[in-house]
Length: 241
Image (cartoon, rainbow, N blue to C red; front, side, top):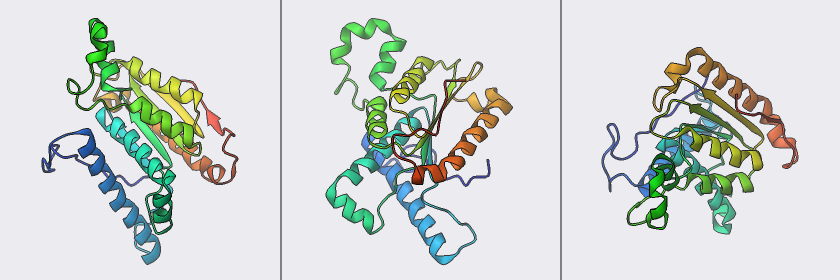
C-alpha cells in the first residue's frame, strides 16, 4: 500500500502496562496519546526535513473490532475539541488535526446492540443493558453519526467478513447505512464471504488488498477535492461490493 503504519497496544494488551485497566476512557486516552505523538512527529519531519516525510493531513485511522470503536471515538473526540472555543485557540498553536479518513473492519454499532443481535432473547432486558451491567457501551454508531454529521471532508472504508462469529456482519451493514445518509467525501464498503472476525485479510487474500489499494487511491484522488470542493458535494460513493 506504500504507507507508514503506527500500531498501538492499548493498556492491558501486548507489552503495554495495565494502567487503570482496560476501559473505554482508558483506551481513548491511549489512542489520543499515540495520535498526538504521531502528529508531532509529522510536523517535526516537515520542519527539519527528515528522511521520513509525513503530512498530518494524510493520516488515516484503522480499527478492527473494538479497535474500530476506538478509532471512531477518537475521531469524534478530536472533532468535539475543535468545536470548543478554547480548543480552537489551542488548535491554532498546533492542536490535533481531523483524520483524512477512517477504515473500519468487523466492528459494531455498540456493545448493547451487538449483544441484542447475538442473543435476541435479551431484548426483554434492553432497559437493563447499560451501566453497571454494561460498564462501557462503546456507542460507535452514535460517535460516527456525530462525526459524519459535522464533517464532510473525509473518507471512509468498511471491510466486513461475512463469516464473523463474534461481531454479526449486520452490525457493519448498519454502520454503512448510517454513513450512506451522512456521506463522507469517499465511501467504500467491501464484503468478504469467507472472512472471519480476525482473519478477513487472510481469507480475503489478494481481493482484500486490492480493495484496500482501491480505497487508498480514491483517498489520494480526493486530496485536492477535500481542500477545494464545497462541503455538500460528493466525489465518490459506492454500494457494498
